[in-house]
Image (tube, rainbow, N blue to C red; front, side, top):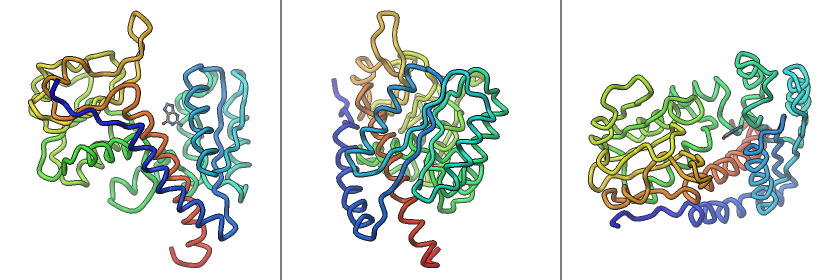
Length: 292
Ligand code: GUN
């Protein structure tokens, strides 16, 4: 058991303590950061995630407004709520919890996410913010990838000049993760379901980010000795036990540093969200003062 275990819970506490100072400064100027969450449908995992977000907001002094909608909510109903929240000055950040109910198609979901005001897009899912990330401009970055970057820094590894492999190419995690690593001057490979000889690609990496949603897929003999392994997976195994995309017990014998599941990336995603909400409120003040 050689790997250092990267404690996302402790690190997120540190981030939230830093944010608390900024929230106090905002409140001293009469601004309470506000986060609106749209939770539509009855996905049990989404209900748990939203509860965690509400709790983190409350602990920080961020006001959370959760809009709960039934499984029968359609795209028009969700759109009406987004329009209302876009116009509400007490709301600095808007998050549409995914997945939306089955009656909302993938195209409709994409259109809904695109209708969120980019300056309130604390999830970083809007094409404008994704474009800013591609262009290297300031914008909101998706919370899980930014949390992963902070964990890599915590491992004491500077990505510059390192080989990084991201497994998974989702818009929410894989693609922004790869762009952040590239911005930090890593040499980045994105692997996915059509990648040939995935194990060999992963074995080349100094930094591995696994975001595929397959329980314990990354095996010890895929990992270069000393590598930093970030596990974004959140799966239940056949016994109902929570586990990641990495075979943690075995990989810990080889890796230099490793995130646990739970207690690794999850808390850092919430810290990333809170960071974006505080930034959204700060930016509103700067924009109003013409400091953009
Ligand atoms: N569903 C699963 N993860 C996320 C997330 O990070 N943001 C949103 N909005 N929905 C999710």
